[in-house]
Length: 233
Ligand SMILES: [Fe+2]
Image 1: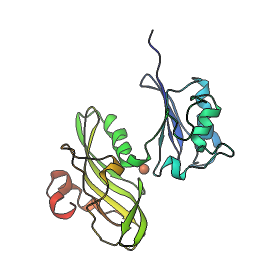
Image 2 (image 1 turned 180 degrees about the vertical axis):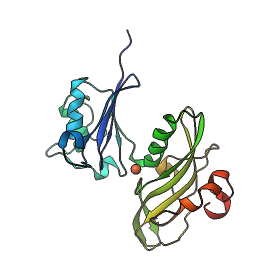
Image 3 (image 1 turned 90 degrees about the vertical axis):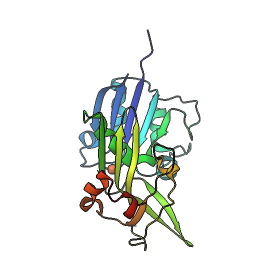
Image 4 (image 1 turned 45 degrees about the vertical axis):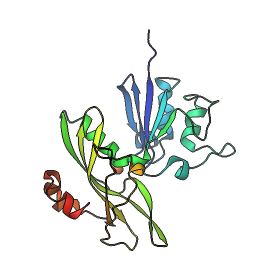
């Protein structure tokens, strides 16, 4: 008899929660606020405890957020590992003896926040192929260097072409900031950072300016390809 595969996905930020999968099927999914009774609660610790009602071990703990687990999650006293790895470790869900700072069962997907939104929408859509339009207050954060200045920016809107089994090609990305870069256009963002390349393996190019909605008035042209080359590449 083959071994069951247990995977828990957690969201760290607002509306945090846990979704537990057994062999690819959802066992339970819950938002932390239902357990903590605090609306929009972040940090899904009570939800992680609930995993123990169904399994005493995980194969993988997959973490979604907008900022790096290692760089931005709180640290546990004494051991210094991030609080989510520590929680899973303390509950015995993941190997207690593995490297707690780069735990082989903990997968941080914070570098592809908009892609995760697209995957959630696409895989539940019933379509064989689709275009996903992501409009999000703040997706993955990145540091942008501009001259001698460096400032923080984040995914605001993204358009993906989606197809099976796991192809998500970026057609457009708007990156916003509160920095002094109004209407600036950049074309050298690291594709590696977002893990997004086109079908030929070439890095996609992105545009950045102030936070806010740019896409809504242009989405039809973008989806039909009319403005890709002119305005945003
Ligand atoms: Fe989001």
